[in-house]
Length: 263
Figure 1 (cartoon, one colour):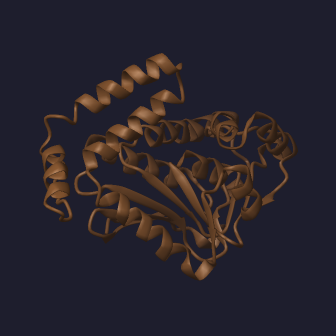
Figure 2: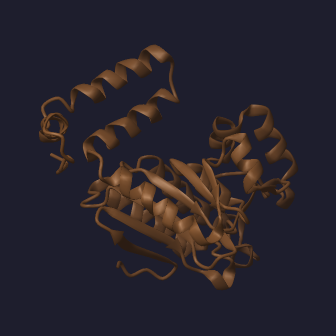
């Protein structure tokens, strides 16, 4: 397990790691140190994901995923101090978007403000029945600044996103699922186990294939269909000479489970 002050990062099973926001005394809110540590985590994955093939993210405790930026920490900041802190968050968001491995949000409680934006930055989400979401920034005299105005319309549609952002009104996990933000709502006591099963299923697939598919989806969501398909073909063709492609076909014909090595 890596040593950090505000987060925990640990290997939970072969190829699957768990990142936990670990400031329960402050509702797992993000301070400057957490921004620095999250930025480092995603920098490390970008440079070399090593044996990690899937990352699960959750919050310490059973009530709060992440309350967003720590407003107690921000109270009294000068404009310059606020902007300098937010610049760290901005770098973290960009690095998270470029993370080569899938990120699954395990939303165990309230995900408000920047916590909701972090959840939106994950590849997909599973949430506890008791989880709640909100982008509350406008009620505080600011606005989403960690990808919220970009990622929320993709998840729930433009009109629903406008309502959520303009009003700052919290909504339930059930509503989030019905709107397309959450993939599945689960009982609190089975949330982590169910999420880990899915993470392990992903991790047991060919890691190069998963990474290339993630890149292709990300590009296709930002461009037109023709360019998106061109990128998909580039991503596809890079897998033809891999050992994993040969292993996958061989395992299918030999009626056995493939052993992917990421080569």
